Structures are given as C-alpha cells and as structure tokens.
Length: 235
Image (cartoon, rainbow, N blue to C red; front, side):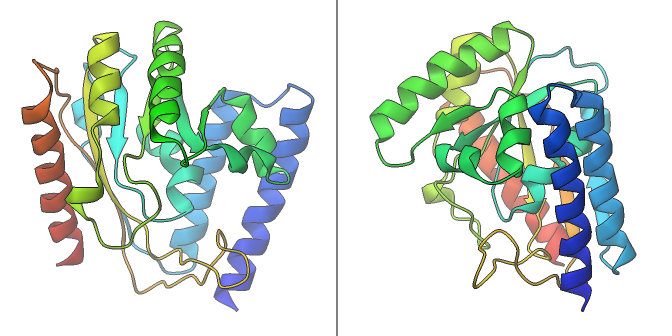
C-alpha cells in the first residue's frame, strides 16, 4: 500500500512537470522543488533521510563534476535538490531514458549527456566532448561511474570517467556517496520497485578535489569517501 501510494504521487508529479517541459516552461528551480517534494514523500512514508556535507559546497564556485555511486531511481529524481539550486546540474544518462514517457521530457530539458553503455570508447568520447561543453556553459555534470545501478558498492566497477572530465575542463570533482535502496528495483517496471521505510536514505557530499597528474590519487580518495560514508549509513 505504501509503495502504490508513493509511486502514484511521484508519477503524478512527473506527468505534470513533463507537460511543462514539453512546452519549454519547466524551470530548473521547479526541478529542485520537485526533488524536495519527493524527498518529503519518502519521509512521509517513514523513511529517514540524511543529507550531510552541504557545507563543502558553500564556497565552491560552479561548475564542477559530481561523482557518485548509483543505487536506484531515487537519486536521479532528487540529486539536483540535494545539491541545491546554486549548482545547475545535468546528468550523464543512459540514452534510452530519454525515450521514457514523461520522465524523458524532463531529462531532455536538462540537456543531459546521453550514452549507450554498449560502446565504451564512443561513450567516453561523448562524455568528454559534451561534458566539456556543459561545464563551459556553467552547468555542473553528475557522473555515475558504475555501468548500472548496484546495491553493493564495488570499487572495481567504478571507472575514472568523472575524474577525466574534471581534469579536461580544469574544474573540481566533488564526491557524493548515496544510499537509496529504500526505493527498490521493480519486477515489472524496473524503475518503480518496492518502497522499504525501514531502510535509511543517505546523501553524503565530500570536499572538492582538484585533479593532479592522471587523477589516480583523487580517484582512490573518492572511492575511500564513498566506502567510509556508506559504512556510516549502514551502521
């Protein structure tokens, strides 16, 4: 019952926002507000939401590259709200998401960077090329280095694409550790699974890192930050 009620409310909000986006009238501020409302919906069904590290963005001048682990649909809906309206952001997304009914219209309004997840070399070229353009426009880029959503964080599957983009554009990389498995993976519709209020929702924002040399040190620092933050959330 909780799952049905929450997803119904979220879908209603997505549909209304998609109609606005289709007419070119959906603003970034509205996107942030929608994300905050969805987080409130999660709280209203009993989920505990923790957001830490916003102070690390206080004196940071946009744009930057946000590098996060990827766990569920929830972060795609709410990360702009978690980061805040001071940073206009877009995502590196799987190209097929842009074909989703309604939600695809909202994503398209963000000028995302679509990749296929089938051709790593081509995806790399697109992210570096288009990501660089977005950053030059003052739009920060959210990168999920994992190829797919994973409940268990596996460092070996966490690539350096975000680090390379930050170095190319000479902007800081900001790690984000998230736990969002309270929003499960669906059996019929993958993006809308069971809601489990017993699981906490956590967003930890780390300090900005400035990439030196090949960025190996910074990549390891991001992995360490995510692992440490997730241990806090699971304990």
